Length: 438
Length: 164
Image (cartoon, each protein chain N blue to C red):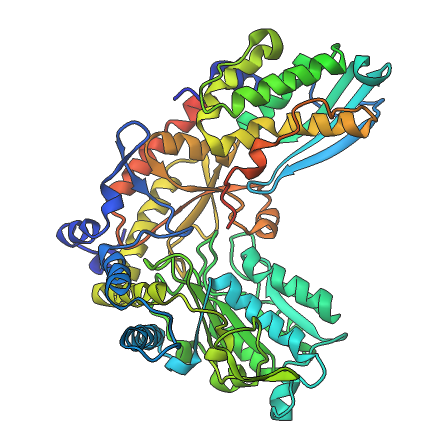
């Protein structure tokens, strides 16, 4: 580790205080072993501040948002819309550009279905023709993704290509786990209408060069969609700085509740888009012959919204802001460097992804040749160390890296350097159990 | 931990009857979508119906120690036996694996399969241990054998597995 990475990391006292906010971190697993939770890339734990905010909503303000005129309805609506403002501030956006969804997957599907629904007769009536043209997708058009996408930012585009007749193309991945941008200009062409890619790989930990991809997409007039599930919880994300058109992330990976995600989009684009799910409060006027729709973000929030979860997510934003996103990034970077250094001392372990800390986030996937990742994970679990095993919903990426599956450790602000040691100690049991030469 | 019995590790390192062989009556390819494990499996039968003898079972298993060892033990237990007997072994194996530790297994019916008794305490791994066995019953069905008299409930189908 360099002094630079240690400089911003949380002190022992700060770490103890942070961990004290997460009750689950003090429980034992597998016969009394302290829990070492290194699976925050799958879902993070939630501090008591988030749980308290949800409980307070239910105990004091519970009511259906945007319905009714009684006092509780007013308070619930106010809490929900205040949460939207907090989340918007957290990513440098305006509140009216923030749509609450069930999760990031729904946010990405919402955009994909906007293209499909735009093709219906009359769907884009009244929309500026130049804007409407950006959502017109058909044979000869191209959708560009990358080979390192999570299935949530891959399958919806495969399906959209199938429905629309457009062609799906992708940016490849290099052997060391970075996007291969050498042929960016030939992958993204004048025919490209959509460029959807991940900010940070959930497997490799790679932080992708958003600016270079956005610049090329803009040259050809393509819309850009960023999967920010693995960046918003760990990096200081500002949608204006990133320059993308849409960005989706989930609440549960950033210390917030399950069941809520966020789709951010440029307002003029959201305003041009037809709805995805239809029903309750997303309407403007309903007659038996047909309906008109509310302005964004309400247009995309059919049904009684998840107000308690929105309040909880806002509390998570406040919690992260209080810790300081730059501190969190620095802390997790120190953990990543420590784990990479520890793994480098074990030649029987192979990291899948960048082996240095440059442009790298705190997800570290690895394999022990000769031992299946499930079995590696099971040995770690026996020591109380919780990691993810499998293909992490990125099956094509695993094929590209020539592995069937990986074992992945991933971090959050509450992890410590001593937990890296516990992981490495548990990992050292693997060769003897499975008879692997070291 | 009681998961990785020596006998399981032995089977996974040196699987019995491994590799795909001819002749065969049916070939199936089963995958575990949660982890990407794969099993291609062939059966060759002599005779008709449930009294037919499984004259060969060959397979190519790609996966964890639990799933590869289970395929090896499956081959040991069913080759040379009738379909009726093999389906009995499958039922006994599944019963043990889904018992959450209550059923320690019948060595007469599943042989080395009793080493998997510990797997039943790890719900996420039950599917690994059953991958080859479910492929086997599918291959029997595709060979034209009526397997319907065996218990048809599939307890692993509702087993919550991580997916995202």
